[in-house]
Amino acid sequence: MRGGARKFGKGSYSRGLVACAALFLAACDEDPAPGPGPGEEGELYLIHSATETTAGRVNYFTLVDALGQARTLDYSRSLEIAGRPRLYAGRGVGFFAIGAGESPTITRYDVRDGALVPGESLSFQNLGVRAMGPQAVHFVSETKAYYKDASQGLVIVWNPAEMVIEKTLPLPAEFIQQGLVTGLSQWASRDGEAFFSLGWSTTTYDAVRPGTVLVRIDTETDEMTWQEDSRCRDLSKTARRGNTLYFFSGVINGLGYAVNGNGEAGQQDCYLRISEGRQTFDADFVGSIASTLGTGHVGSVMAVTDDGTAWMQVADTSVTPSSPGTTYSEWYSKGWSWWRAPLDGSSTATRVGGEPGAYSGFTLSSGSSFFVSQAAADYSTTSLVDLSPGAPAAGVTFPGFVLDVARIR
Image (cartoon, rainbow, N blue to C red; front, side, top):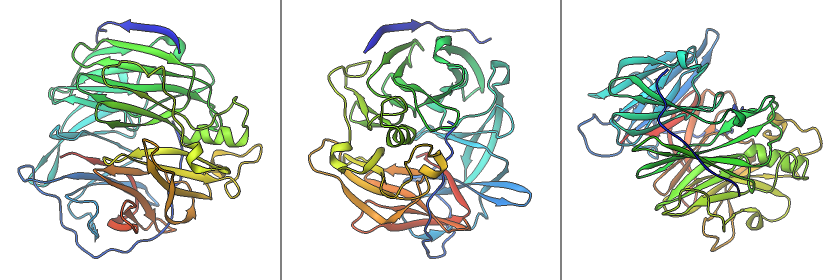
C-alpha cells in the first residue's frame, strides 16, 4: 500500500463500458399490475427499460412491487422519456432522480398514488460535467446526495430536497491520466461513510493499468480522503456484509489478463475489503475467486446476496476469444456462464443457469435473490430471471431491454 491519506476540506460551490446483454426468451403470464402506492407496505422497485425505434430510443420507468413474480408489463402506467437518461435511486429515500441523456441535468421525481411525478431540475453544466454517468449518485439522506464525475475526478454535493448545489470535492488532478479512461466503482457505504474506488483503462477497453485509489467521504463533514493501493486494479463492483465492505475487480481486468497474462494489461481476479472500524483497505487481506473456478476460467464477482453467496460471471477461455488482439466485443461474445460460491470460501464454486452465452452487463441482487436479464434475440422482450433457486425462475417480463433496476422501498 502506497501513500498516506490526504484530506480535502469543504469546497465551495463555484466506463464507459459497452456490454452486450444475454440472450434467452422467458415467457410469463400477462399481468400489468402496477406497484403499490407510497403509503402502502411492502417492497417497491423501479425498472428502467427501453425499446429502439426508427425514431430513436424510448425509455420506460415502471413501478413494480415484486421482481420474481411472473407477469408482463404493458407500460400503460409507465413514465416515458426519449433519449438516453440515467436512473438514480436509493432505498428508503422516498423519491428518485433521472439524469438527462442530452445534457448534464438531473430531475427529481416523487411517487404519488402510483404515479411518477417530476419536480425541479438541477444542472451540473457550470461545474464542467459533460454527461450524466451511470450509478453516479449516492443518496445520504433526503437533503444530501453525492454525484461523482469520473471525467474530472470530482464529487458534487447537492441537496435533492431543495435541488441546489452545496459544494464540490475535487480529487488530485494527477488521478486523471491523459490518454486513459478514468473508471469509478459503484458506491459502497455504511453509517457516516461513503466510498468508491478509482482506476484506469485504455480507450479501447482492452487493458487496465495497475493499482487503484480508494476514496472515502465522511458524510457528516464532507471531508474526503484517499489512499493508493497497488495490489488490485479495475475495482468496479461493491458489496456490503454487515459493516464490512468489499470491492471486486471487473471484466476489463479479466480481458487484459486472459489475452496478455503478463500483468501489464490485467491480473488474476482480485478483491479487497474494508473491515468494520477501518477507513482504508485491510492491509492483510487480498481475495480471489480463481482457485475455486479451476484452470481455463476467468471470472469476476458481480454481486453478493444477503445469504453471503458471491455470484460470478465466468468466461471459459477454451470458448471465449482470448488470442492476442482480442477486442472487448469479441471477449463478451460467447462462453460466459454464471457461478456461485460462499464469499467466505467455505466451499468451491458451482455453475448455475442455462447454457453458456454472451456476457451480460445487467445483474441485480435483492435479499437472497440474484437476478439476471434474459432477452429475446431481437430484444422484443426481456425477463428478469432469478438464479438463486434450484432451477432458474423467470420473473417480471417487459418489452425491450433492461437498463437499470432500483429498489426505492
